[in-house]
Image (cartoon, rainbow, N blue to C red; front, side, top):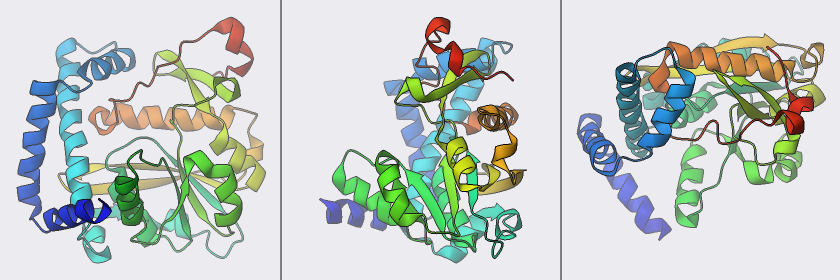
Length: 295
């Protein structure tokens, strides 16, 4: 099954992008107008995030989101045949903000959100980084597709750590110096070990892992904001957040990073993965008040 899927994707990847985007547009029509894939979730999320916008404005964001969503997976296919030179043509980054830490003895942690296109960003950042580039990823349920995507994500040198086995694999794979990229807005699995805070207009829980790792390993923390410039072309802006995570009180670094995710989404609302339930857990003051972090 692996070779069948891989062969098909590899073959499709040789099609010109303009042809693949026709396929993306067709898939968009199916998802949006025929199947209505998670439209209720997307509109619910947008209503929470942007109550000040009209329904017409939110619907426009939703349509743009679905176009970006479909393009992401079509561009993933193209990545099977792109080499580093072609990736560099489509992905620009102020990588010096990361590479300046080479030779300093410091490890670096990059925090980002579920922005488009994370697959291009993964390969682009790994290719540009002069430090070993480590990526935490969520394995797929289908073993054949999981191996295909795993191999693709490694093609420019990324070291992959499964989020489901992060503690075990980190001991083996996180060898200093390293640059580790994490998603800071991941839905937590265990609510008792989270920080709660306002995300847009409603409380939401956030994992403690990125902040805890930064504090324990004394890492430099960067925020990675990547986004579409035009179809097929992306920019990543790296920003120094802190050289000393211990200078922040418990939860305040997470609060700062969540604010940066929120600000990035406000600037480009359709550049965010709205099809996931961002507010799937309900706030219970009696149960979670000791985990609350103020702005």
